[in-house]
Image 1 (tube, helix red, strand yellow):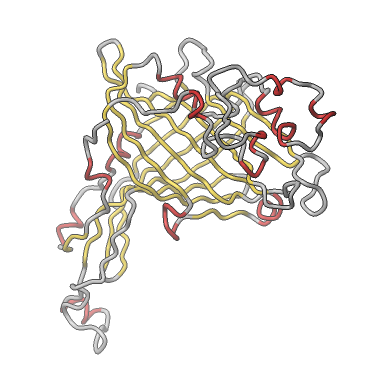
Image 2 (image 1 turned 180 degrees about the horizontal axis):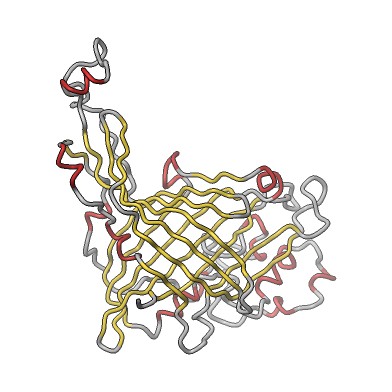
Length: 367
């Protein structure tokens, strides 16, 4: 794949501030493509056209003080309505010698199960983080803001400049009691997104099973091929009796789920939805609350969630794809959202990370 817009991969630049900046219309960058309402693309009612989530939750009666990680596993299809609205006007962030103008895009999602029952709601903002401007002190600002004797005209012109290592942010509020802030970058790439096949798909960064959950009893060099039927032990009903505390028993129900292999690695559903499509190019947005975003990203949990099921990390991939269909170019949106819960502890006494994953394929609703 070749990069069509490689400058998107670089850090934002620092420009000299002039009053004309205030007259520049809001710049939404690649986020402008999102404006509108998106819904599941599933014209044939097929298995790859639904959204899918995987969720591990503390088992009823369990507690984090005395019991190792007993959990309830849920995975199901869902429908989604995802709306993006461009916020009018640039949003000016003033930081003294540094200023930044953001293009803000409000989002709101409503997710229901296939019977119409609500599963998830969320709202927030995407920000296209434009170039930073250097704004030194002027004769007027020193006078108006009583800058003397500490400031004189021209101060701040020679840095230090703030040059962010990211171009997009996302903040959101979730009614379970979590608030998220993700930061990341975007790139434009020719062709379709690439997903693994066979043994290569057994990658814990994308699985609903983490190494701290026992890793389904696999060992390095011996992955489970998710493009083949599940191993025989997955359907062995005696496993919980013969080996109640084994790693395979711990994760057997995830691999035995009726929607296999998607509850094990949900983004394979995105891969399979693309197999019959002609993808000309795509914009990839990658965001995280973790170290890739630096110290600015993070998650806040309300007291109950923090005490029992804190969300500690979130990673997000979004693909805005140009699809050629019946001679026409149309936009399609796919995403993979991975959050990690931490509750109870493993049989070895260590912290257990429980992946909560959401994936979906959507098309924009025509006005």
